[in-house]
Length: 160
Image 1 (cartoon, rainbow, N blue to C red):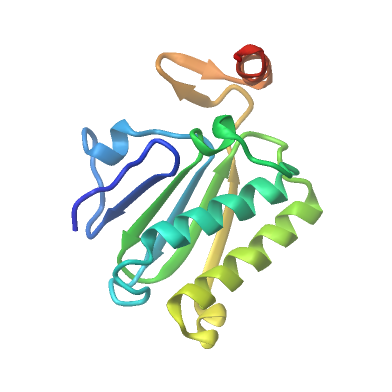
Image 2 (image 1 turned 90 degrees about the horizontal axis):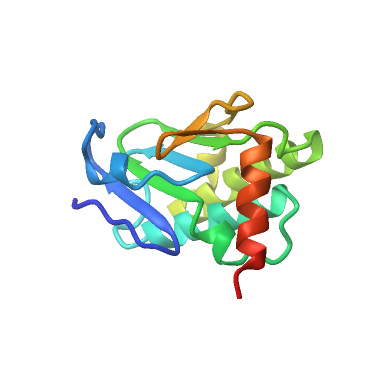
């Protein structure tokens, strides 16, 4: 299956581990959602639906009520077709409070079960929430921390 990455929803599907230099490695977004699942778990055409719903669930758990282009263009959802089902979400430090963590794990599990068409899948779905260390998210040669993220947000707001 070819890799798919679109500007609004960075979605990549791969049937084997993705190495350096792959389209996926070059299309880094933040935060990132990785879904690892058996190749036949979800319908063949479900990658976009799964990625979009998981992205919106993450943004909602972070407290983003109305996601705009800044949010959507900077969140990556990668669908890896291999067992078992494991959804890993990587966020900047502190963006998810405990209530948001609980909400996101429950919603991700519900989405995976719904899209797979198997209600029993919930019991076999692992969700891992991971925070990057403060200043530990590097992109384009810059180590991003709270200060750099705040500057990005300010620039995005200032654009017409």
